[in-house]
Length: 145
Image (cartoon, rainbow, N blue to C red):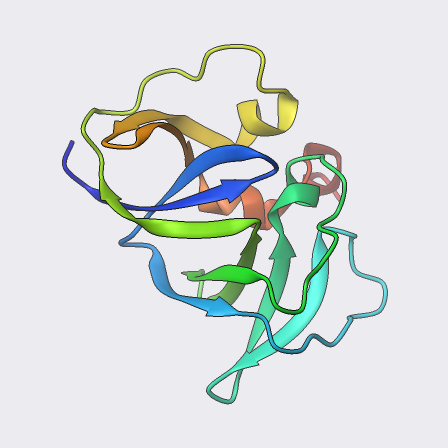
């Protein structure tokens, strides 16, 4: 596997999102809450006059919410015709996957078990390969709703 990956930090873990899925990386400048949405949906933000649904990846994985949203980085992705800003703790760089994804070892927790498509090796070390759709769906108990 020689795919390009956006290397980021989510809930204290080194994670990777396929660069082919990432339209851009942005800094969240403002956010408008959406009433009656699950807590992993922080609200909406704008990018070049387009609304983006902001997903807090930490909450989607079952961890406590991000302390700061405004000023944070997000990976913009598209799924089923809608654009999402996936809020990450940090976005580092783009790297080449140096291995095919392998099964995620135990110990990362149920959220990562659900949302990680595998673990890949990069020049900077291993990273959990994120399944974008699972982050957008949110925690398992919310996915059934």
